[in-house]
Amino acid sequence: MKARLSPHKVAPEIMKALGALEAAVMASGLEKSLIELVKTRASQINGCAFCIHMHTRDARALGETEERLYVLSTWRESPLYTDRERAALAWTESVTLVSQTNVPDDVYEQLRGSFSDEEIVKLTMLVATINAWNRIAISFRFIHPVKTAAVA
Image (cartoon, rainbow, N blue to C red; front, side, top):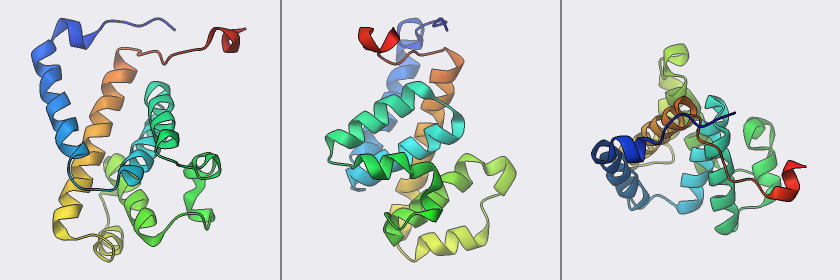
């Protein structure tokens, strides 16, 4: 795979705007560990290797376990996630796949059991932001760092 272009170099002002949204989401008060789970799950759904690499690394740096990262794509079948995380992951999947799910009421009601209205808006902006990043990284073929030994 070959990278196509660098949007940060070609259109820095518009990329700064997305960066500002990212900074606002990161400073929103949502738990950093939850943010990384959401970013990783959306990136898995979208098939963004660059973002999966980045956010699993970031999650590990925050103390996330390998076990929870390994089973994240099958979180419904695992007892390793809290009710709050489950609600956020269901919301993440539904919003990421909005054209298929139309974000059903039961997913929203589950979310309301664990998140305030303000947190729901913040979580939704988190999901929207990572989906934007995924689309940019996939479209322009961002390549995640590779250790030389791993390539062989």
